[in-house]
Length: 262
Ligand SMILES: O=C(CO)COP(=O)(O)O
Image (tube, rainbow, N blue to C red; front, side, top):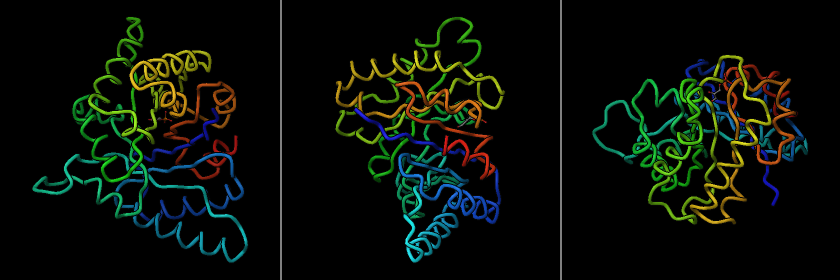
């Protein structure tokens, strides 16, 4: 089974609209001709329509020059699980889709930590993403103290079982999982590629038990946490690491393009 790698950038709460547009333009130019991997960027909500418009313009220009379309797709960083209603300040899956995104990051550790997200709310959000035909990138990961107490897989098992409760494998077909150990996010500490490979193997075998071998073998499992141009190739050399979810190093187009073109 070959899984197309996905290199995704999570811009978190960074970049004004014009900065987002400039960065995506540079990134598209630096990744022209990249054809064996998927690229996704997740700008703040307000920049999504601007980035979408810019990518459309660029793709039209590329077409005229006989170049292939950019492989960059757009993701949101969160959603609310209801489609519409009196939920002041929230953004729904149909709105995200309408703005031009195809992916959505769900359950990032920063949302779990600062905004009270739970496995149960994450499960509802995954359902809402699929209902609107968005690809959910479901984030899981243990904290430093959970790691020190050797509870890593206990925590991941719980996050996966509860986050994916009630779904059938055919409903989850485009799901992406991102393993992001909380202690490696923004810290410069990366898990070694062997440690990540071992955990990804365990995640895949849990998903095989839950949803069958066809599903587990086609599912992409990304790693996130201090991914940089100098560690991406080592990570990507492992059989069960199918891409990366990059924070800080995705903000600069040149740095991120080096990661994309590892
Ligand atoms: O949280 C992350 C991506 O979602 C990882 O962030 P860093 O790459 O900055 O460690």
